[in-house]
View 1 (tube, rainbow, N blue to C red):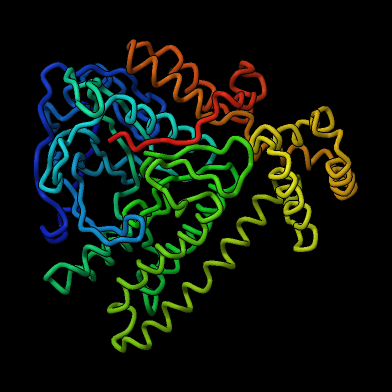
View 2 (cartoon, helix red, strand yellow):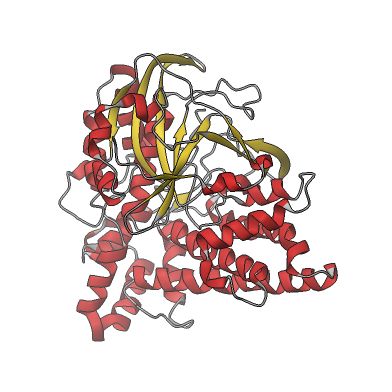
Length: 476
């Protein structure tokens, strides 16, 4: 039997948190892509790729207890009771080195939380999540992973009829800020404590003996998210839907619906077609993360201290560390992007000035940083401008002493390849309309080696203006 080592510790929580339910049994599923590298990392038998019945939920493996998770969330600032409307967690796979991950099917059918949805998914959005999540992993950004995408053999109906598909998604857990928001709104007042204890034991066991483990939990999540958002900013990634149900307690990036990477640098860039007021624009991501963390802190108030006023003071003190942590991480990473390992506040003005020039001249975020790393910056047409030359001279003077180390550092953090929006859309169109996965596999090969300049030119060059993507859609 296939080497899933299932456990179900989440089911030790109150039944308020989940509904035991089986995925749909699709008659003719077919695997179209399988992540054998990830399978090996997790000690999962790669032969699973030849058995789509297990990758779509048609057949349930031993010790699997499929369930849909309940959670809530502030969606664009408005609170809503939610849950897995088209996803089933099959269980927690425990690896040989005792790593625990959730195995989830997405697009696998209706659940108790589906509301008016059909519980299914189209092939395009599932492949999109596979592409972007794998790109994020290879860019060294914490993320959920994708194990497989399978056609269901059935069509789903959105604006038109599209091939249906199921994604197998891997996460350290699917505990979200929204899970905690849900817990404090259940009738059982003990649910929030049980959930917090579970989260600590699963993700942060080192704080179990702390004087105030719940305050420590808040601090840990703040620390994780401050780093994550700085990492997003450093690669020009825009999540698209930073609702509280899309912020994990583990610090992983989750949910790759209307997300994208910036082409030319503009801090006001927003891609999601439903984000009409730019709530989740690139430059708003740090402040939105703090807003989400504040909602998380509110759920922990009863646990932090029996005196609510004291608890609020402790939570506010913890939340006040976010800005410094974010700025510290941002400065560290962007300093590395210009070749300075430990940049000072004074020298960080170079980064600020460079980004001003990026915006002024509408420079491509990824390729321009890469050209600096590969000593091609002076060959760019933009180098004819005096203010660009002036910045370069200041920067070159600063790194002269450790020039070789600076270039090596820059090449290790500035990717040559990202999943360019137009290339992703091309691959998805071929896969959806013609069932041709050639471009998909070529793109995946490129993004799995993102710090290499020896890929085909189309993966290295900015998108032509006519091919730039300005909106992405959830596609659910």
